[in-house]
Length: 83
Image (cartoon, rainbow, N blue to C red; front, side, top):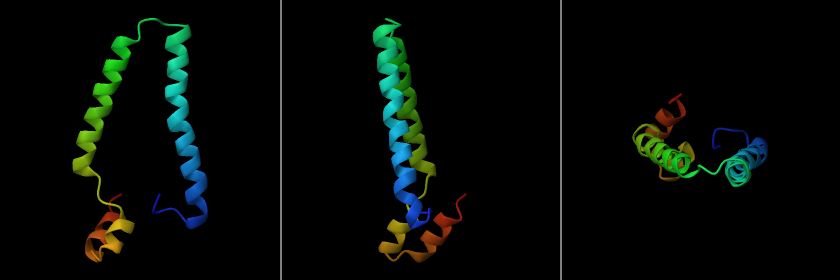
């Protein structure tokens, strides 16, 4: 989000939050009304999600905006060029 122009940060953030909250809601309705075997799906996705977060912690750099606030300019430059 820090890399987007200021005018795009709120709309893109809103769309991402909408997607982030609508997918679990769709899943709840599906398993509430259609499928009754939800336990294995919930356990699998919780484990998979936790694994992705833990692995991502080691590879995703700090936000360039955060690094600039801390006056770590060289690291901010490296974070911008990460992708």
